[in-house]
Image 1 (tube, rainbow, N blue to C red):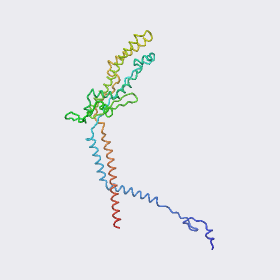
Image 2 (tube, rainbow, N blue to C red):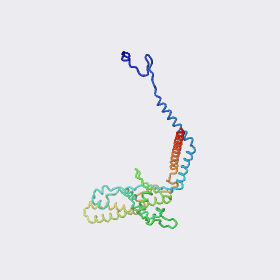
Image 3 (cartoon, helix red, strand yellow):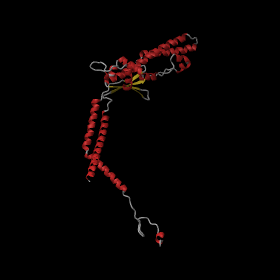
Image 4 (cartoon, one colour):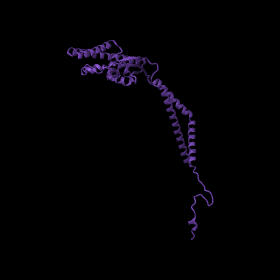
Amino acid sequence: MDTSNNSNAPDRPVGSAPGGQFVYLVAQDQPRGRAEDEMDLFRLWHILWRSKWLIAGTTAAFAIAAALFASFAVTPMYTAAVVLSPVKEEPLVGLTGQLGGLASLAGLAGIGQGDSDAVAVLRSRDFIRGFIEEQSLLPEIFHRLRDESTGQWTVEKPPDAVQGAGFFVAEIRTIDEDSTGLVTLSIEWRDAELAAAWANMLAMRLNDHMRQRAFTEAEANIKYLRHEFENTSIVTLQQSISDLLENEMQKLMLARGNTEYAFRIIDRAEAPRVPSSPRTILIVALATVFGAMLACFLVLVRDMIRTHTRAEQAASQV
């Protein structure tokens, strides 16, 4: 058998003929897939456009419902703020360094830290509890637990001042400190006049509290220093104690006559005219977007169900 033609024939690419040109096959999958994507997008737009009034109506319904909810179902809250500047005290570095333990016993080592102490007191629940008891604020704070017509509590165990302080700190009062040392005390409440009044009263009560504490401490320090002055015969120590006594007398004088002892009120709180919450515009905008997305989703699901139903009916008729 002659197999020379088969064994000696040169290898040729598939699709080519002897002495002819190469033939290249171009795959059509990619252009076809792109065309199908364009058709799908066009069909999607056609489905949505065909139901444009349904989508517009659903979106409008959500927007109107959100506006009504924000206007009537949610209680408007008002935020009043008072801006405070801490009163700086100059520390007696030289005297406290000379007296050492004596100054610590007299309570003088912490001079110059009054602003941080005042902020800590303002943040404390005990300070707020005293304010609530002083102003009898429990009926106002827990107004939802009282019958407005009879003035009686609607719960078996009425809330106490401790619970009121916790609610006041968590929901009503806010304290912000900036890098310059200014302290902003904000009160958010349903009544704009009450919010401003509470903010101003808290600022004044804080000054009174810190002034009374400084007055008590100064009197105790003066008593202690006079006792030490009378029981020492060292002249230099007597001179140092005398300087400390002078400083404590100055503190006592400031505590008696200065109403803004811990903080100076830079900007008093005023009753706001515009509520801080709810944010009606934001609520309506979010509801509008959600309504439009929900309407588009329902339209597409409806079209998918209809297409599937028609396909089943066509298959059953074959």
